[in-house]
Length: 349
Image (tube, rainbow, N blue to C red; front, side, top):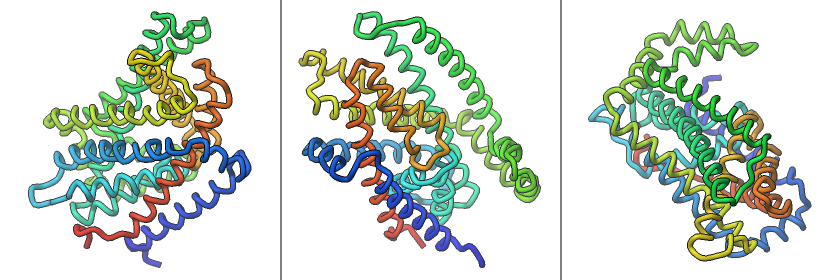
């Protein structure tokens, strides 16, 4: 059977539907308890879900900066198309295993309807790298946010926390060195070679490198070119991706306010609460990405939210509520992404 783009699209769609069904029947609470949590969220569920329109718009803008730097003058991709592919791509990332990589092949296939295959693949790989790179910066800067809150007496500093923060600091510095080399020389060819070290993929890696050597070299050249010759696009994309994490923290901010947690109220109290929300997201996303091979990070995200909330002195009930509402929000946006997969835009052929 020949795997056409439409058949691959249908496969991704069915995978997403299956994930939604699985998630609906694998909540750690009964449907009655789930409904109670949703009712407790009440009208707060609107900004919790709605803020992701802003987050995805910022993500799309970041990717659009990269697309604009790699495409030819005769290749046209509208922002709305990039926005739609951003939502559908993340919906598939939530749905698929192996670190949430399902959205990247889908984005390449869909974007190749408007660009050359090389440019589509380059833009998607570059954006994936930028997405991860921004994650590291978000986690890295969160270390200093925690230290600042320790300095003002808001959070404790124990020997265990000190060792943990020091270890993470060193690891992130090493990660930045790896990213610097990747942006300087490209990572496409090395990535395929690394994939060959995974059991069962050695022969596939060798064949892929042999048959697509020229394409991989072009992609690596475009990756290196973005950082070297398009610094404005590079840093604009990075700042936007980082800012999207800051905006994402408002999801936890809304839930803390729902519980009446505002650190004393006033502008200073709200600012402190928002910083706590950033730390909750940082620790939660860090744990979820360490064990990212599970579809939708089943159990990992929930555990990360509960642990990170408890680390900031919040009651377990708050962490459990946050984890359940976040899962509900993910399901809602997966469904939205699946619906968008079946909608045809004006730029699709």
